[in-house]
Length: 116
Figure 1 (tube, rainbow, N blue to C red):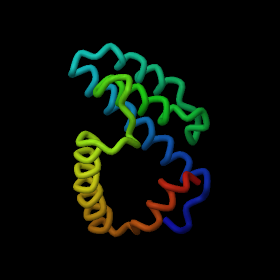
Figure 2: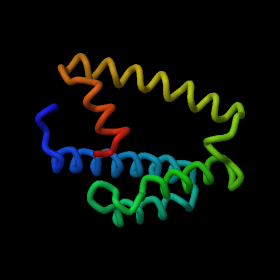
Figure 3: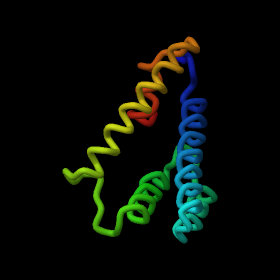
Figure 4: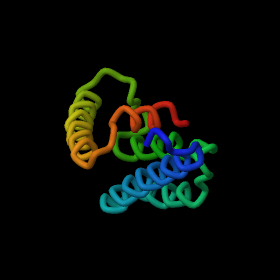
């Protein structure tokens, strides 16, 4: 991981973003929300390393479709508290799997949070 080139990191980041948006679109489709079509369009528009910020646009559409137009992930409320709790459980499971497979979490954190 340490020796990965910037190009490889960007390829991985692009795949992560595409998969994330796809899963959001699939859930909205399951819930019969029309916004799922827009998220699928964002996947088609995704540029290398998400230079057009499709992930950010998709997140706004996704959360607005689920919780209403006035919803913000920055608000202090029970929805955000529940989401944060769920994310911490998922992150813990993800970290265990990454470590169990011999990868270094710190390298992935750098990749994800510093977006190359």
